[in-house]
Image (tube, rainbow, N blue to C red):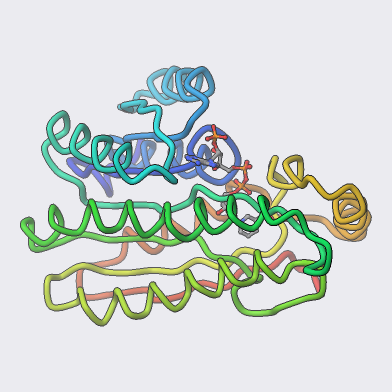
Length: 248
Ligand code: NDP
């Protein structure tokens, strides 16, 4: 256990797998008390056991970030239980790839509800707490897809582009309250993200594309998050774009 984040509370959404779970483990290893949020409670319980085994502290909370009321209650619970929120990692997301023409528009609604509205609801609920503390750090997980649009990922691009824009506006509104904002834009990371694609042709195409490269590991993104949040207070790492070496 390191102690760079000793005494700090970090709230991580989408912590039941992939990047969120790895980030929770890494932030807890730095001494933060982590509040881990997702819909799959059993996966969160497993994660909490692992963090505790490593000597860390974690609070599991089952919540759907697409539900504003659940988000408000979840944030209130973290504040009431752990006393403060120093770091928010807005990570929960889905990538339901597919062509625009003929798309199942339910996929669009899910992506916008989770990747955009969920991130905004969580930020909205946490901001007053950070403002009262006169300090905080919000880390938003966008994607290379927030920088480069491609055929077959139009609406995912919409959501991740939105995260980049929201993050910059948020930074400008928040820096006077000593609230730092970092946007992280990963390329391909080996996680469960592609398992949820509903369009079979898009899923197959993505699988073939992934086979042509060695993807990043979730721990690589967790390391970028730890880097950003452990800088001295005067340093605001605004953006980290991180691709696998073999990604085009
Ligand atoms: P995973 O599918 O492994 O993780 C997604 C996480 O989001 C899960 O913990 C899931 O938990 C959670 N989640 C999904 N919907 C909701 C919801 N409505 N409420 C609460 N939690 C939710 O994928 P990744 O780790 O790869 O994805 C994490 C983030 O990284 C996403 O924002 C993704 O867009 C982004 N990203 C991923 C890349 C990659 O190549 N893997 C590349 C660039 C960005 P549960 O289902 O239990 O609710």
